Length: 361
Ligand code: KG4
Ligand code: ZN
Image (cartoon, rainbow, N blue to C red):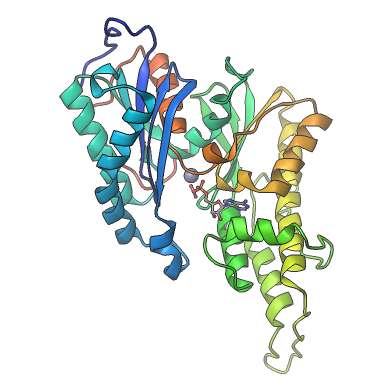
């Protein structure tokens, strides 16, 4: 059984309103977006305090917290938007990739709502949705020019995409080990900073010397658009803790680097690696005049500055989302959900739609 296709807008509402739901990791989020671009509400209940003591996200803890929070978060998103369930034209939900138990909470809620309201249901790729976040921001009333180059840097993903349209997205390369956000979080743990580490490393780096440590940048093969951050993390570990002697080989003592200097040097190395690969991708795809970026690490002050510099040098239309739309949120899910529905004449996904933990190709 499927919900219907293309519902007529109810009397008094000229705009199409989509409810977005996001529960792929440790944020329970709901949002109402009009016409795929106006964010009427964007509610995020973060679970950071529940996971802090484990220095990472506990999947079972995350699922339980989503179950407790989803109904109040949905109520709040409708109230802040000033709409009721009866005003909605569709329900969009992030159904891949992510923690399977966490995804299922959002998918079950979305199916129940779509079925009971008789409106289309649309499953949205969470990583692709991060690329849409920059299209939701005033003064951008229209979609940017396509094809566009896309960059997602988050706790779970670091990848470059070729976007022929908001919905036709192909991955050009991605990390072969740690995601950039994961590397930030591990660097923070090495330096004794609290979880989630990225914002704390960013804050410490503000007073640090970016050249205090010479850390390696992994270029991989000459034509590769992949990333690798595990060597960088190990280099930081050795600089901070020293290298113990091993099988007759002498070790090295800790460098005694300060926390701000270590953070600034580490952050510089991550940003340089990302900008290096973006330049490589732009040389290969000169037809891309737009740069779409998203994911939690896009909140990083040094990366934002570097992206603005790059866009200036190459005269690119950079769609840099504000902080609340960089991290996980449901407005990006509703926005991309609108585009997906438009591309298929508002046909619904079936109620048998599943949640999938792995990334789309
Ligand atoms: O997109 P997101 O909220 O969740 C995932 O889909 O992964 O990204 C979370 C990641 C975390 O690793 C966090 O440490 C990182 O984004 N992050 C930052 C900053 N703010 C968040 N990393 C560096 N600098 C920041 N200011
Ligand atoms: Zn994310």
